[in-house]
Image (cartoon, rainbow, N blue to C red; front, side, top):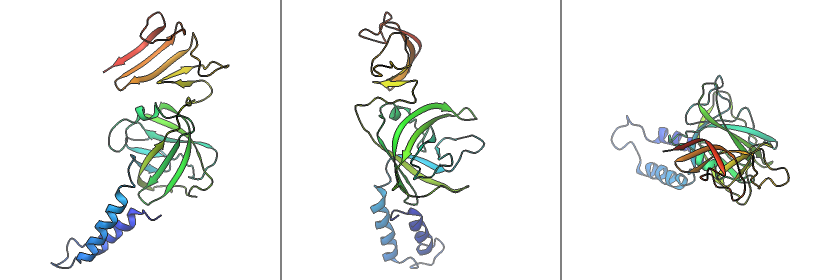
Length: 236
């Protein structure tokens, strides 16, 4: 874990004493720390969160990510839960609306721990305090780091996605994403086929969220009242 920023923090504490006398901070030590930070800074780009093992009394607060007790090398499907607001206080829902099953999620934390996961789907829901959260279904790889966060441990981290295109995202067997909309239930014969009678929901633009039902699937258009009935049409 060569990108362990905690080691740099320890070196800063050791080599740069804020109470030190003039000349007590050696230029070579200061330079080495700055070079090390510059080298690693670009490797910590992504969606920022604070990572921990489990929610506290069912709460996943703003800027937090929880592993729900799972290890990084879990090769079975498991759920990671994140608040919809990351550490930078912006919503991440739009990112998930374009990510396909089979995409790769990379996790990296402040200590340099890195692991990769196959993205299996997600579910918008709420925690025990009614905070909006996203349950992300993932599957780890056998060569991931064999590590489970410890009780009480919290680390800054970033998530990065490497999308796989051309596939619909299924949260579970009851719904499927076609374009920017989720349709349910899917057509059993062809999940990619929009079918009369399906319900749908989704963020179709940056500032518009809709929920409705398909009246006529032929040349489907959500803005045609003969094709779709909208129950919710929030446009900001």
